[in-house]
Length: 476
Image 1: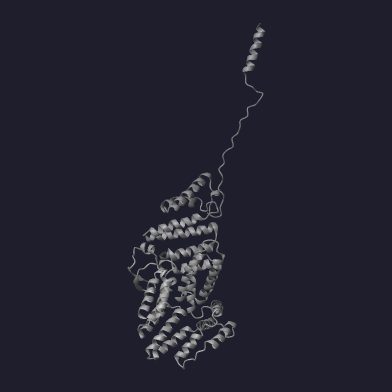
Image 2 (image 1 turned 60 degrees about the vertical axis):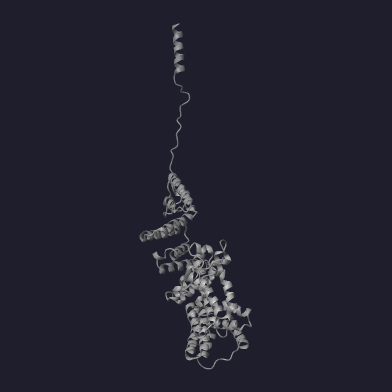
């Protein structure tokens, strides 16, 4: 009995004791390792370079500032834009809109500020944003053009002409005929003005003018989107570039041949065209043996012969004009006007000088001066005022960008002159009415004058070189 009890006690002990047949194995949990930030050779960081927490903050900031931009809430956009830009200026490494949005934000702040110190800081910030974009995505020539454009139109008081001009040159040098469309008009105007003021040497002006002509040809032909912008450009830049024909020795034989010889081919019997083309080819320095020159001269000699004046200033004037020496022609015509007592001749040749300044030398203010002088010698003569009207109507590219308000309001004084011409001289009524009908449709519209708080019939002074007081009218 005692042995049996011991046996039972042993069984109970074994059943209740720990099991040792299968060892207990503890599962190890892998530690969470933060993604290391990549080493960068620049500070142009993308989302992929951030840790998880900063990436989430940056991506959220990008979404938020873009939403505020859409509603033009630039104050709130700025707060989130700065966070996004500081953490990951390059975003995902592909998009670039953050730089454009940054420029928009600080340009808006610039426009709304009256503090010059703050405005300068905003300009500096815009330029730093442009520099960062180059660091991240390259395309230096494009950014040079953007900087120049902004300095020209928006930040002119906080830059200087020389810096702007040099930036435009770099943009043109970088892209040549493929230059970005938005720099064409402002650079054309700046180049023209600087050359005429003696700030830019002849050879340099010729170099960039040639590139601009190439860009005007290449751009529309190879445009893929927003191509209507080239219509605006072609209503402006060619007019400015053509005005340089008034500068002696600016354009060469090739330029004048390419531009004018086709006029002769289309109008081989028209003496006005023949004489014009002949003088233009000689103005470009085309050799007498040049085939185009000999063709035009043959037509001139056989179809357009006029007996030369007697020896004196008139003969010298016509000869100089025929040879494309327009300034010499003007000097000789002036000499003749001073030498004669005949008011009819004074009127005739003053008007002829006015037409040379208009069509050949491209100097509108001097053209008006001589047209008014012509009118003084012959009362009730409408032709000088027709010419002045054409001068004003042609001044859209000189007084504005070629379209829009500043280029449209020149039609008001132009139409005034056409109306005055036919009022004092019924013989020019047909021509005057033609020009009135042509330019009435280019006057501003009602909405244009409404937003400027002026009304039809108000007195208005047109500035630029015109400086005439007129009446407000609309095309609709």
